[in-house]
Image 1 (cartoon, rainbow, N blue to C red):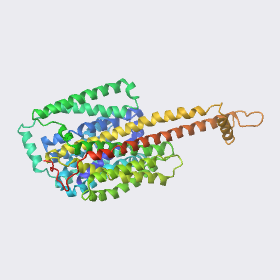
Image 2: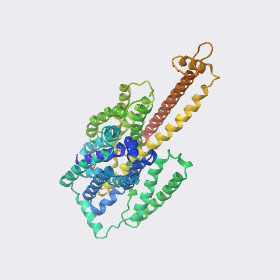
Image 3: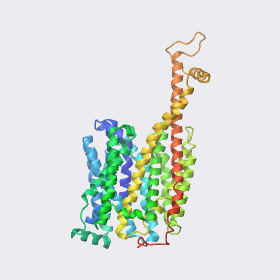
Image 4: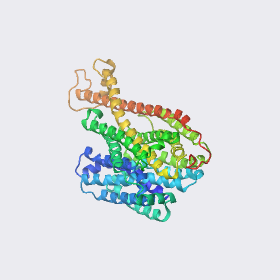
Amino acid sequence: MTVTLATFMEVLDSSIANVALPHIAGGLGATQDEATWVLTAYLVANAVILPAGAYMTTFIGRKKFYMICVALFGISSAMCGLAPTLPLLVFFRVLQGIGGGGLAPSEQAILADTFPPEKRGQAFAMYGLAVVVAPAIGPTLGGYITDNFDWRWIFYLNVPICLLSLYLTSRIVEDPPWVEKQVKESQKGGIRLDLLGFGLLGLTFGSLEFVLDKGQEDDWFSSHLIMFFCVTMVIAFIVMIWWELKQLRDGHRPILNLTLFTRRQFAVSFVLMFVLGFSLYGTTILIPQFVQTLMGYTAELAGKVLSPAGFMMMAMMPVVGYLSGKIDPRKLIAYGFLMLTLSLLYMTNLNLQLSYGQLVIMRMFQASGLAFLFIPINTIAYIGVKQSESNDVSGLTNLARNIGGSCGTAFMATMLTRRTAAHESMMVRNLTTANQGFNSQVKSMAGSFKIGNGTGPADGGPSLGAMHQAQAYIYNQLHRQSANLAYVDIIRDLAVFCACMLPLLFLIPRPPKNASSSAGH
């Protein structure tokens, strides 16, 4: 419960500010585009620090590092609320992202070391609640706060949670002996700080997050800025791999433990966690956007479409936690991806006539599959891993989920724009005066519009203004239908993507029953 508090707060903060952007822009005298840096700055800082968290614990200890991150997150949250200008708000969001990025790897490592293998699934179930529920309620809570109070309270909300987390951590959490041993070795000079590795890590994942967040907005590779960051990312990534492997050969502690990818369990679980993040964050944004832009739902009502699914996952997580200690985790993952694929195929029935209840059922069906993924994937990732590598595992799996979420969001935004335009260009061919069906539809609808200005034909037909209004209405319906078809295309692609994960499970060796995290050594 202690580490779950901070997890919930951090994951919530990655989505709660989304709906408050117009209010932030208006309050600080900035444009909507400028205000998006509030989101980008947080994501970039978060992505950079996630894989480096395990490395930092080597020098200062896990408990101390975790408490520093919680304190930094709380202080920067308060400063975000007090920020008088947008540049200062973006700066404090960077600090907040650094603090938040260091939390998740430490938390999962604490759970892995605290609980024996047979109870680890239930521990990850509690932790998983925060990870899957927070993104679902973030936009709703953010909308409620900004509508009824002030946007600054979405940041002030973190301060009391941080204080409670710091108090509980200081009383309950302790570093295991092997962590204390690593800290002593580093203090004696046995482990040196890899500044170049940290710089290359920051360039790689910072550039990647920037490209994913700004790509669609700047039309991807037609933008020189996006091209610059793409080239920077590729070069930095290649140099980083070479440097980290060199550090390993020279006997130094690398900032990224790439040897983990030589184990099939970890390599496959990394890919599966990426796809989980891709699907979870992609659909968490897709559904509220669909109901708000096409069906006229308010932000609060859109959030209520997601909320029952959150409760569904809350109910399922303890069950999955219990089953993970009894059943082969590969079977649980297979069931989860199968249900996720079927739920996405069911969601291809999405249309503008769906009721609130039908939308809720669609999302709950999807949630039933998601609940069977987070815990078993984490369980497999830790099989055969030394205790000293548990921080590295948690850092990289959280990085996979976050980068997957960013890729899912970017994929959705890009596909929605392009597929809507493609469907519009195909459908608009029929809306011409040469089409008798279109003309008769316009005349039929124009009769229901009472326009005061304009003159009708001699036979007393509809006025010219009524004809124009009927045409505008039909074109508006065409745009809505095109967007609806684009959403269906995205969901179908996600279903295929999830189905492709099932064959990967055959690459995972059968895990030993109740194997410890060091079973492979």
